Amino acid sequence: MATHGLPTWPWTDQEAETLPLAEAVLLEAVRRWAEAARRGRPGLPELRLPLIAEGAGTAAGPLDAALRLMPAGLVIGGVLESRLRGDEPALLLAFALAQRAPRREAVAALLRLMPPGPACAAILPAVALGLAFRRGGLLLRRPLR
View 1 (tube, one colour):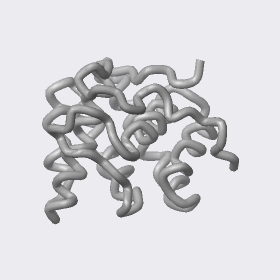
View 2: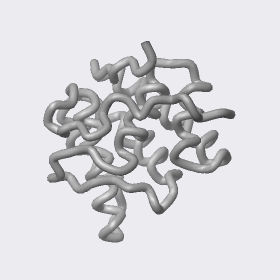
View 3: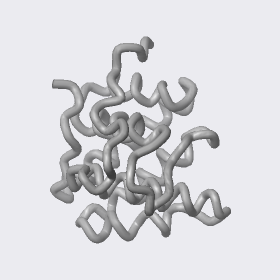
View 4: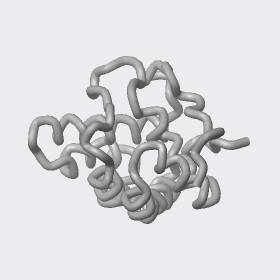
């Protein structure tokens, strides 16, 4: 499946505090998970707080499952970093596509981050994350308009 032509949209070099609520919550949860992983701790307990605070606590399990499938070299910033960096824009895009676009586009976005096997495995928890966000009233921005 071709992955060229997909935008890194629109969060490249974005200030984290200017993100819409859904993306900000997701970014904080991902960064908490990544920091825990760098310290050798489980990420699931760390990522729950921002999700629970915004009524999307049921997204914790699917997000943890999707992140555990990501390659070790994924570049995720620290919780206190002011700008998005590394693979964060592409990760936000992949989760937004999983929530709001055809699955093939979400898989294509995941293929930018990981090999085909893990990308196909990650689509199920990514879709479950999108559903949990939707039930909590959090809609990620529609990436392809």
